[in-house]
Length: 152
Image 1 (cartoon, one colour):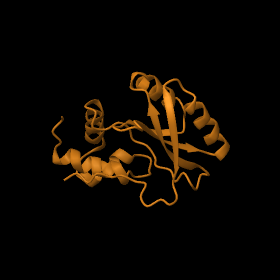
Image 2 (tube, one colour; image 1 turned 120 degrees about the horizontal axis):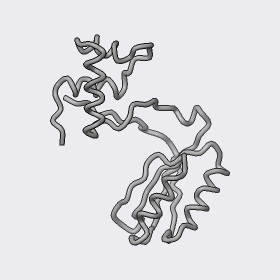
Image 3 (cartoon, one colour; image 1 turned 180 degrees about the vertical axis):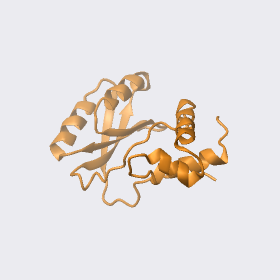
Image 4 (cartoon, helix red, strand yellow; image 1 turned 60 degrees about the vertical axis):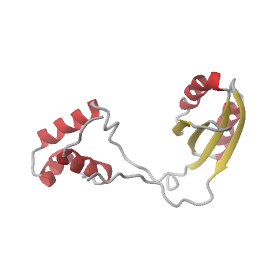
């Protein structure tokens, strides 16, 4: 595990939720942190190379874009877990996919632009070799959809 400096923690806190929308966002971050753009870019590269930072990207309000989400629980034969997980990951609307303990041992989230597309994908997933059962757990109400880790 990489030891984070106080600079790294401040940088990661900014990148999680306050990335400036401007022509030189890393220069603007550098100003906030009392350094220059090059230093910020070097630290971002180092954090990415060490695996502390996977990507920098936008976070969309899927509902406002016309998408619906669901949480899906699969009961998968453990000998076919890898193949099923890889097949599920091929669908562009799959945002998370985790192996878990218990009867339903593979869980994923799926975002689709229409119920018909969700139905199509879940029908295909249900028929994958090794899938014994599928639960489609539609959300009734969103209470929280964002994760930010405040690093101190």
